Amino acid sequence: MRHLYYDRSGKPIASLDEWDRLRRNPDALRVALTEGLPGSVSVSTIWYGVDSSLAGAPLIFETVIFGGLHDHKRWQYPSEAAALAGHDQIVAALREGQAP
Image 1 (tube, rainbow, N blue to C red):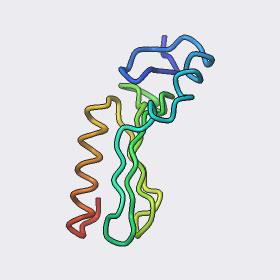
Image 2: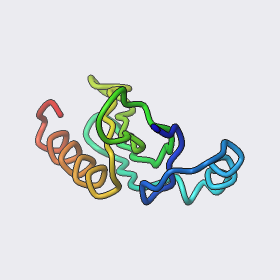
Image 3: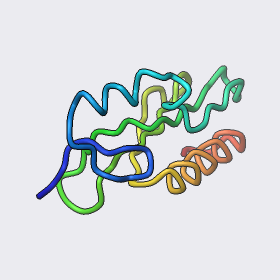
Image 4: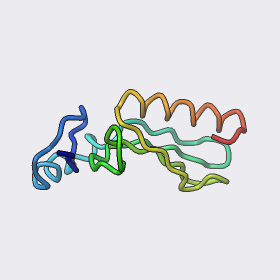
């Protein structure tokens, strides 16, 4: 059975109420934030906790670019480690003036 909600460690959450309780703390949502990139761009990575995949590993983390040419471009990840690595790669590309 596929679950819809997952905690930050990737374990299924049985109810919407439990997912909501975990997300009420804004500090629990933030995985990484990089501000002040060239062109006033920011990159934010959060634990979302809702599986947006159709198959395979649950995608429960998301990175979004705010500002610049790639405004609102998004990437999704199955784990916090993958999300952090993705965040760092995106930030490095933007700092080098490359497309993420």
